[in-house]
Image (cartoon, rainbow, N blue to C red; front, side, top):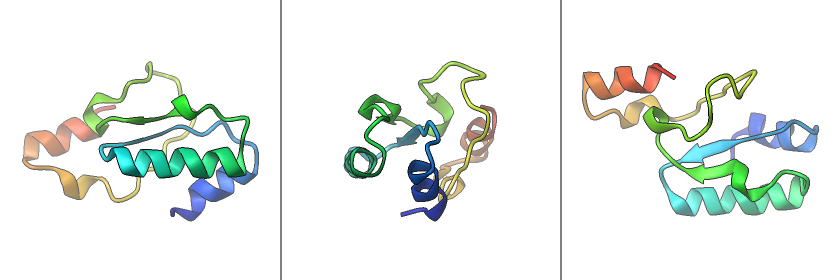
Length: 83
C-alpha cells in the first residue's frame, strides 16, 4: 500500500480515494476503518480518473499512484490529466 496513504490516515488527514477495482476500494475501506475510524467508508469509491465523483475544489492536494499507464489512447491519457 502506498506509504503516503498510510501516513495520511495515521496523521488525521481527511483522506479520499478512487480505484476502478472494487476489491481495491474494499481493501482501502477496511484499512481506513482500522487506522482512521473517523473517515467514512464513502470517501473511498469505485471510479476512474476521468470521472472523479467529487465536486471540483474538494481537495487541497491530490496524490496519484500507478494511474497513467491505464490510458488506452492519447485522448484517454489527456482526459485523466484534466481534473
